[in-house]
Length: 318
Image (cartoon, rainbow, N blue to C red; front, top):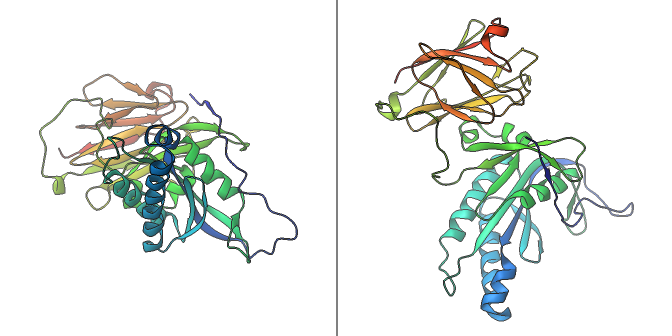
């Protein structure tokens, strides 16, 4: 269920009438914040904690520059940076997490960072290079939602990623974000293997990963998911890979993604999905995952018996 997230952050989207501005252009805005810095000061003392934080920020700045990004400003123990596109921001964020994870502990304390980013139109200050606009504020909210070790972004940003990169994004929830009139669907970028990525069904005998494939049939049109095409978005949104016309379906209803040599259906809808594996009873999913196996059908927002006019058929080769 949607829930409120209270995000306290400086207003990075404010500008004055006298500030000279460049024309609006699309950028990815990223905030990387050192998690638990107050604790570092308590345990290490001011001098050592400051040196540790400065060292970490230096690493983040170097990685930003190596990926064609620009550090806009440092805000305490946080940096704000911009990138030319969403996929560059993803690559940078993942490398930042890997670099910080690899830092040696200080008195058995490890530094962790939380990252949030959002892609959209921004306005740049001609004089000092600062950036303004709703995109900046939304990116700041994403960073506030993130926990240590997490990379958080919006559904709009994920939709701008190349399909192969979208497979690393996992929907968390639809959240009411402070300062936004409409709820925002929030995604986590998975930058390392996680034991939390569990599936509801048991193990089955595996094919070699390169051979595993899933055939989907919707309204007479066929889609093949495999190693080269590992991801598909489903929903009423016209930008979805497979557009679902049923009014009970959500705009971003679900996704199917390849994980190793299997394919997982991930529901992220309001009304849920109803999956029937041939020979078994229909299963209802709501914000849950199911390993697809054998063959069967999927209905969107209601049980198949209530309206069988639109279904997605699936056929696994494993």
